[in-house]
Amino acid sequence: MLKKMNIMEKILKINKIACLVILVTLLSSCKQFLDLKPESTLNTGNAYNTADDLNNALAGAYRALYYEYYQWDDILLGDVRSDNAYSGGGGDAPIMAYDNFNITTGNNRMYANWSQLYIGIGRCNVIISKLNEIKDPALDKNNLRKEIIGQASFLRAFHYFQLVKTYGGVPIELNSNSADPARTNIAKSTEKEVYDQIDTDLQVALANLPDSYSGDDTVNKVKATKGAANALLAKIWAQRSDRDYAKVLQYCNAVMASSAGYTLLSNYADLFDGAHYLNKESIFEISYLGGNWDVSNWAVQLFLAPEDGWQKYCVPSKDLVNAYDAENDNVRKTANIIFWDNIDWADENWNPCGDKSMFIPFNYKQKHPDGWNSGDHFYLLRLADILLLKAEAQNETGDLGGAATTVNQVRTRIGLPGVVAAGKDAMRAKILLERRLELAFEAQRWDDLVRAGILVSTMKGLHEVKYTCGDGVPSAPIAISYDATPERILCPIPQQELDANPKLVQNPGY
Image 1 (tube, rainbow, N blue to C red):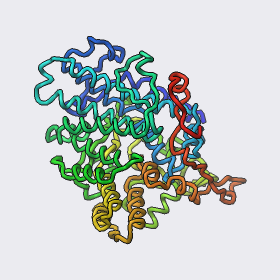
Image 2: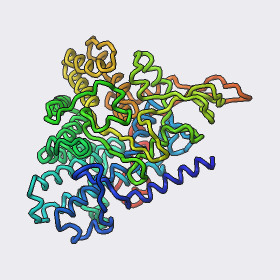
Image 3: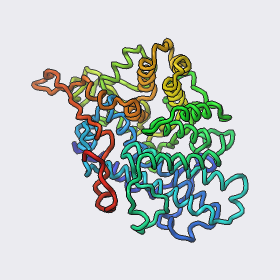
Image 4: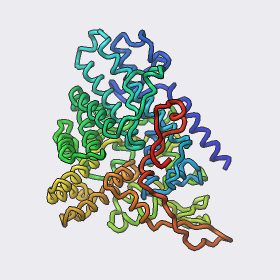
């Protein structure tokens, strides 16, 4: 327990320094660095006088992708809350609450998520508001002004997408990092209004971003591009309650027609082996450098690294493992899950008595923990996701044959037989399963279940069990009951935000 407490203290230390560290500058190469101006200057008028000032501010806006939300909580919210994984971690209450549908208004993870996403939005707001005030001629050379507004608009849209999926309607704050309560203490907008704002930002991004910046994918895959904007547009028009599958098709097709030349890698495992990042399938990814806490992917240590001697988080569920086995999908199972024996702890789902001869599964999407300093990347948008989203849109608009053809592009890569169009409902289920197996531990499963309208029924219909141990003998299986209700699809507004902003109203059910 002491070792685990020390580990969590390290995580807290990372969070405290997150706003002060050096960022990878994405303006020329993800391998170069620049010293950011102090955060305290972000609101001052003299902080933005030149193109270089805006370039630095844009690098700071990308820095929000390195925060804890995108390293860790995105996966917890997308996979641990779903049927893909158990919380793990040895009983951490805030994480167990994700898995048990028992998130409270005082859950400190909710407050951290909300705050980090709005910090990212605030940085984009400053750039967007200041851009037209700066008369530096350098901004009007080589489309720099357009690229900056396009990137800031895309990033703001991306953060709002995370917020609206998690909390539903949220305040749409488009001002700078103002401390004026009259500007920042605003009521929640509706879900539709938030999605409309996201769409507005992405239309600005489309109008201003290039398909690629150069022939160097160390830049093209880590900066917002027209392909990334089209991909996110496809996802928002699928996810919003008033979804429009014709628009989903439009934007999926735009991604596939991009001059950036997105294509599936021939070998699925290459996507996650650590040696093939920044590839042709990637549309937008977070490039961690490794070897330095400031810019490394420390979350891999929380998912993998059994030598630490304590149970890790996001433990693959038996239901997910069984889904891979039922499809004979050994390629993706092996790439996404690894089983280890000789484990030093008990696991209530897989190994309740700590039998070292038993094999325990781990989330294996990123494979190189490197002692909290991993250089493994996270994909935020990749082509297989968009292909399967296109298949979903084809099916929902009546093109079942086209949907089957599109799904089979993804299945062919891993050597599985093609699906056959046997009716819209059957095809919908096949696509949903394909997305599960393809995108496990990429923060997609929860959204997919919500979009399909089967989140509650799926979680209530699970036959998952856990065990206790007495005198080295596992107990009889104990059924796990997931208290899933329609109200719990959304998370609660953090109590700290309700206290600070009297115009906010809590989500129903909390």
